[in-house]
Length: 256
Image 1 (cartoon, rainbow, N blue to C red):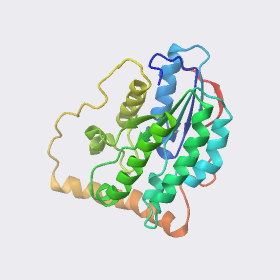
Image 2 (image 1 turned 90 degrees about the vertical axis):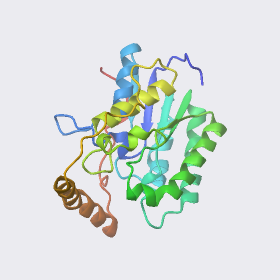
Image 3 (image 1 turned 45 degrees about the vertical axis):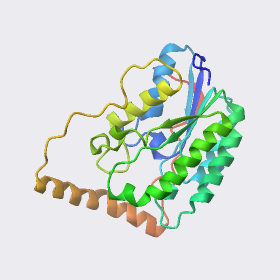
Image 4 (image 1 turned 180 degrees about the vertical axis):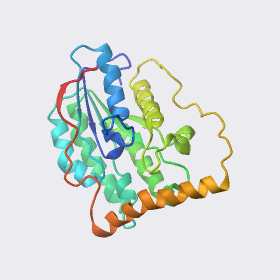
């Protein structure tokens, strides 16, 4: 990577993580780390262009089919590719097939940009992440290999303890909140060779003890509002992203 490279455009690919859930804006839309990163690059680069092709719920095959060739044809300086964890959440996931699809995507994207960025995705610490750990370790090890083969930057978000802290996650326990997205934007900013503006991996202050009743109430609300609908979609073969279009489908100037 050219540490002092000048980047004039960014295309972001992936699922809900890159779309920006759940970094809520007042109008009900989502911002997210990719928008934050684009804004910082645009503030220093007149005419900076940005596209975000990510759509919540997408599996790696869908990202490959719907986003990769479109992104490769845009000729952006920086392309970010994050995907595979939606697949890993499914009980019948073939993690080797997920890795093969990531390989195909990286092979198409790397020759068509100045810098490809891959990530070891963050995960909220808890029983779900624990059950997925063998798959995640296989996936992240492969992403490291991809980075070496294709000259990609690999941003290790999973290894940052603070991004496992429940306080940087939204109520649905699947998506980062505004503070989590801010830290991811800073991590990618630094990985692109930019001067640090904040210590993104520093831990949060110690958390105050929470009463048993408050913890159980939060668990029940999570199950009712988020977990049961998620299970319902899995059982019926539906996705939260069905029918949705990317929020920034074209590589256009980004207004700061």
